[in-house]
Image (cartoon, rainbow, N blue to C red; front, side, top):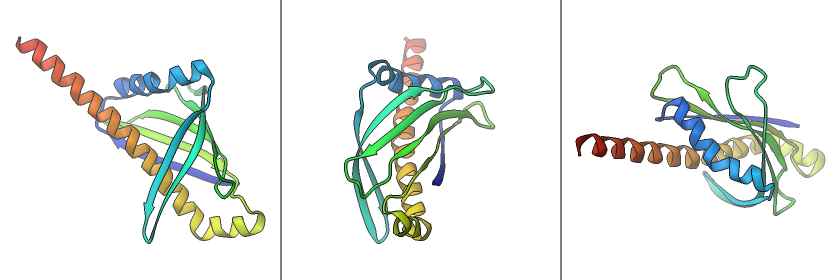
Length: 158
């Protein structure tokens, strides 16, 4: 079993980032249906893209500070690992930023040979894939926050 932890600081206050993540995931949790997702990563000298079927569920933060979401994906190809983990927004050191975090574990496919590959390069590829997912989500949240703030400014000046 290989562990994964990736984080991205986002320029969005914690309370709003939590709301944005809930807005994105809660409808998927309500349906319980898998969502297709293309995960793309460019790690020189190669670029990879894989299709996965993602399911989400509510998770519980034992400290009751954050709202984590359980995330599970099955790749379309058996050459990639199944992943189980959590996606959450964490408080940052300032009020204007938050931390988008994914943590979890996966079993590299291919038995002993797969474990060796994971040790040599697979971990870097998994981390780069997680970072690409966080980059996409973070960019979406930052764009929504800028839009909401611009809208507030226009309403105040009208």
